[in-house]
Length: 338
Ligand SMILES: Nc1ncnc2c1ncn2[C@@H]1O[C@H](COP(=O)(O)OP(=O)(O)O)[C@@H](O)[C@H]1O
Ligand SMILES: [Mg+2]
Image (cartoon, rainbow, N blue to C red):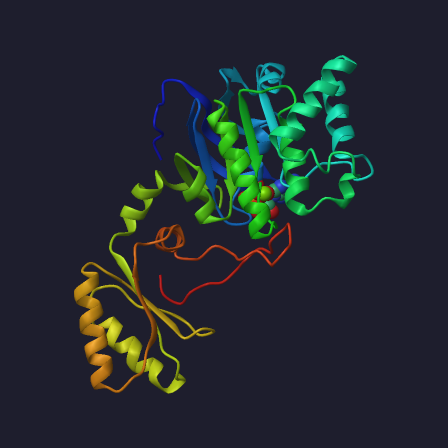
């Protein structure tokens, strides 16, 4: 996989390789984030996201390959990297007994700030992350989204020009996710370079200027969200067949629309197929199904989502995180066709 050779890359990794025992976790990962942009590292559980993050943030050494953050080599100058990098790990690292304000004050003091400066910085960050109201409650009483934002605030205490966020919204409810997205957008508007990892395709689509898709320790695709979508081509024709007895027939009709195999979700009865001429395919399919007296519901025609891109690139869908859980289980749904 070639990388883009961005001249002012704030983060650059070339050929990162890492084994854990015999397990090959990273197999030559290349990536770049231009200064002031958001790089989304998108991949399912176990893809190698956290391993990449740990190498970039000097917490782990690569077996092979090189990486730079803000121009500093992670292996040769780890202190230089740490001075310019804010890290928010996959699991929010806040002390639940301390208040939000105390957590940030503590981090600021650890960075060597004097008391007054540490108090000021904590207050600034609480305001920036809309945590002022709850600032003096123990952070153990915070919602998941608030805790995540507090952790993010902790990563920003020293005003780093580069920030790495490892799965910033995994396990958050939609409200917590939306709030975290807003904070990340504000961070970027203020000029910070962000690398964020995610399992959520729509999150990369929403936030990232450039996306690398990783699977099993390799970069399998990269580009902007529209570029990735274009690689899969065509629109998605989807319809729901309410009666089980009709499903074979409906799938047969969709299979006749073109070279793509239809996909079928047995839980919902939803049939989906990629088509190059959506409107005509829709008309044709509905005509045939009407003749066959097959009732259909929820008919739609939509551009491919990043989920479709992932399926097309890897032959498997991303694993679904269990609701509310921070750590999704490995494996995941596999579709029969690819
Ligand atoms: N400390 C470790 N020891 C052994 N295996 C590890 C360790 N850290 C990660 N791995 C393995 O490396 C692979 C990549 O893991 P990770 O980078 O955590 O993936 P992700 O963050 O994308 O879910 C996985 O197969 C994982 O089990
Ligand atoms: Mg991880």
